[in-house]
Image (cartoon, rainbow, N blue to C red; front, side):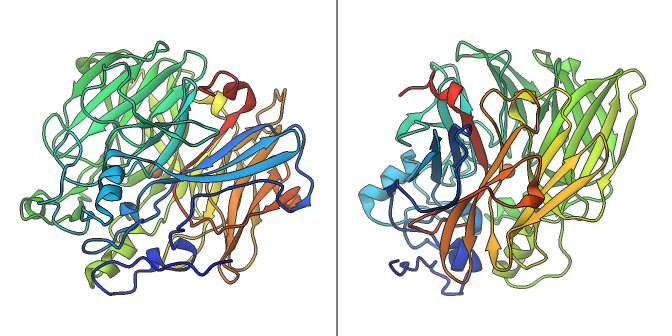
Length: 483
Ligand SMILES: [Fe+2]
């Protein structure tokens, strides 16, 4: 295996998110006939796709893990065989830097003034589409956490299909974690930014056009990351962690956690108007990711990974602060919003284990689901996913599988077995990278029996850097796709 070329930033300070298991890879490859330990199940058919930052050029200024260029790594499973492929998301900014042969943008740790262009909110930061990867209407959409253009990508060739405008109906930007309702074909999204309107909520219909979009009033600029849907509602968040606007005016990016403010959850009918939103108060916290939400006996149930103390104590260099802010420390948590009384009840599902990047059977998005599959977050200074945890919200039980010393995985979405009817009848798939060897493999586990370990390990010819979000696209969805 070739030695990786080191991509540094201009600070000269060693940045852990550019080194070791995070170091970007240089090559875009396609590989098949790979060595398999065990056997790839013949009833596992579809594509596992994972997005993440992969800095292409030495950074202008300091590098933040969220700054890297989006790269999708994919494993296509078909009748007991598997093929690996990785490709950059060719965003407008990526193409501009390719033409220049160097970085043209500074990242979130520097003043973006002077950058070539940004999102429609005028943020001036590089929309790298590096955050999530979802599937809707035959194509993959890659998205960016600070709101940008969703970039279409072919799920098999990983060819970038361009910025998705939803037949020229999208105005403004798109956040990282839109929700797809497979039964209706709709896509639910929001758009946020530092200037009014602070939050817009919208729906793309099954025909591929934005059919609904409303501006929602917030007390100030916020940083919502995820949302939820139920059968009849969408749920949006107003959380008391936000950008310090005084610092922003000086061109600095600084977050503030206001412990005096509640967390607020806005419940709005799926096609509701702004005045129809109902806000439910809860204890202050931050939430990156929603597991699922549904309606039950006049209440809305919302399961999340909740960050109880989002602002780390102490100070230090900008790099040290970035590292401590980035470190995930979340617990599985359940809210109930009573639509009759307006009351909120809340509590831990699991108070002990730091778990994040949750997934579940995507066919049940917005409907009652029993199982959640989260990554276990290692007790370390940077984000390392050392295993998988399956939660059973009927029995309250959990099962954990660890990859082993110095081995770290990715988000592992549920992949139903062909013809599966039960929500645990399938597999979990993850890239697993070995810190000491500098190698990667794909592991396939039975979702119903994580403790048994992988049924297949597929050895890859190239390391897969640790990254962000993943999705599973079933073979029956691929048949309707662009290729
Ligand atoms: Fe996320």
